[in-house]
Image (cartoon, helix red, strand yellow):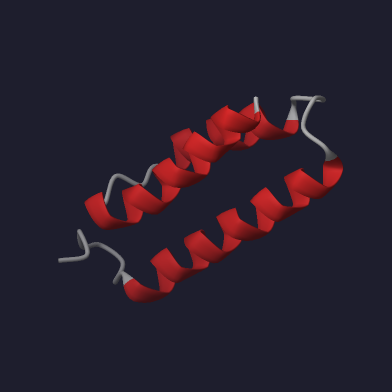
Length: 69
């Protein structure tokens, strides 16, 4: 499942470049990670921090209502 978490984080970073951000998928990714009990708490915290940093960076650099180009 750590591999799945890695791909989820990687997809979030790639989404910043390809502008495929969707809040619906964002919630699904959260539930995939945080409903899985095999992932340790420290890894969940690290993933959460990374998600928030990526999301804040996206929101800061992209004007609302545009595709970011």
